Length: 373
Image (tube, rainbow, N blue to C red; front, side, top):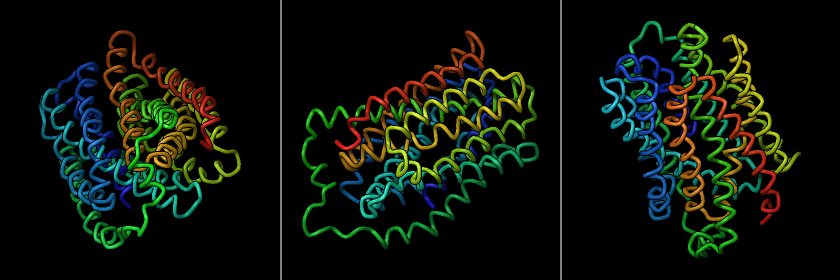
């Protein structure tokens, strides 16, 4: 429920970016700097959240963030300048980053208990929430103001947290009589080789988070501005991307069991690179949508595999480290694409997503000897 809520709220925000860009009068580059607030806020809080999870438990921190995230999502539509937008997105990003570390830490613990690679299933819930959020956003984009839309999303988010939060708090893991393997790994300093492996998977997460953030922040604008798509069809671009991400993640456990970690990472990166080249350079909106769909399939399992592996190595600290590096991709993405769009064009700027997806495939192959480290 919390993974789905996270995706639902984030998608509801991103489909209203064109409307809020118009409301604030921001250029592509200043919008990119304002969008930097989401990733900056997330990165600032991620390492802190790892420590909070160790002290108070990942379930409790997830519920707290489940309250803060809906409260913060209503703020962007109340702004009328790029500076104000960037400041409120800093708050939204802080809640979003905390939620991601806390719920991923809880998921890593459950994966260890189940002894199956089911991490993609949790991220499938995120993508499903994103698909629903973007789909609903597309339906109401023409008839509901951004302020009213985001206010309704905030109300839905608080209701979901009120329903799911008590269940999560009642089922917090009891402290074991002896330290678990995850706790032992967390309490002692990682040896240099293990730390390098965590960083490697964090960089892989960065490459894929860059692509996810680019499509979330710029996909709708590309379809509407460059390909003359209707606002509803432009919003559907992210919904389609989220749909194929969901399909890819629902089959992720099967892929990992059949192909293994290395082949899953390499195949995913190569597929995403090909799809994004089509999505960025296609001459029609429908071909671009097809490219977004292929990109979603390719990127689907890279981030959950990378974060899950880092969590296996170092517990909440590993999740926080890999997530911080991963969201560094979102930190770099909005301003980089914004400036490249001003200097060249938005389609050219979006081809950088394909370059980093290809890099993730190469790094995934390079991590083959770390799969069972």
